[in-house]
Image 1 (tube, rainbow, N blue to C red):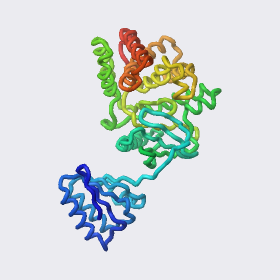
Image 2 (cartoon, rainbow, N blue to C red):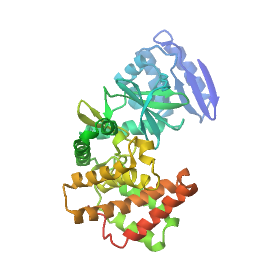
Image 3 (cartoon, one colour):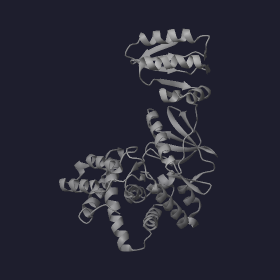
Image 4 (cartoon, rainbow, N blue to C red):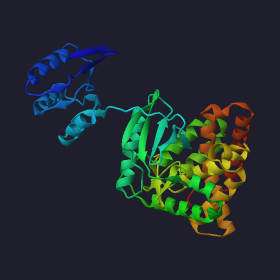
Length: 391
């Protein structure tokens, strides 16, 4: 067997077949290589492996016992992966399928997120391509989070494949003839009220899912970290008061999506379905509503073409969308109640908005300065009148 050592990692390349005829020899070579690289991380490359019998599996079990830790087996063909999965090897080893190559050149862009871009590669399939070439742990985590939500009854798109896309990676989803709510809003402006109503009702469905303790991060912990990041832009009194308001929110195990803007909700056969699950957490509904305020009100406030650039809709439509979201979510036309709810959501939204601006390249230039100043002014205006963040 071929072996390579690089950066204290030993990679062992398996041959095409491992069965009773060569298992004993494979075992000798494998253990010799591992013993000769004491202390190195072990990676088994199965790119050439076409078949493995029970004799070959026993060799890997012996290796697992010898190392006493999970070991990576990479570039596993689909047929061999099925063997590993059926026999329980995917629980004992970190087994990674071989990835096929996918090109998104000329494909329709149907969504932009903080971590990547979603493309439609054919009528039935979309792929979310991540910005970073070091995104595989993030992809695996998003798959895990999506499954957690799915088993709790939330309609969620589950990726069935991870692929290479140029120098990065992507998650592939089968969404037959799906359109996002954003697409529907553009294509069917006459159905504005009905579409926003359906969109909001689905948000309530998401918020009705209760997760198991400890399976997801808590949204309010994220916000306390955002607050720590922007502390230098606040007075000491503002920082302490905002900390107090966030910390006093009751703990809640209900699902929070984290980025529920209309491009992240697909409609398949008239049924809504969540995508982009890497931001999910648990907490109060206000943690999702603040993100919608940031998307549809805060970002376009100082940039006239912001909504056109990111959503393909005119800026003035953002205010209408936000107004309907509040009225439909809380089922109220009471203007006093709406104003009170808006103040609480806006105060929380300004924390996240300032965090996004100040922790990225968005802080540079005149627009960045204007957004930071507007956030500071909004916090100063609202902080004295908001007694709590419960909505």
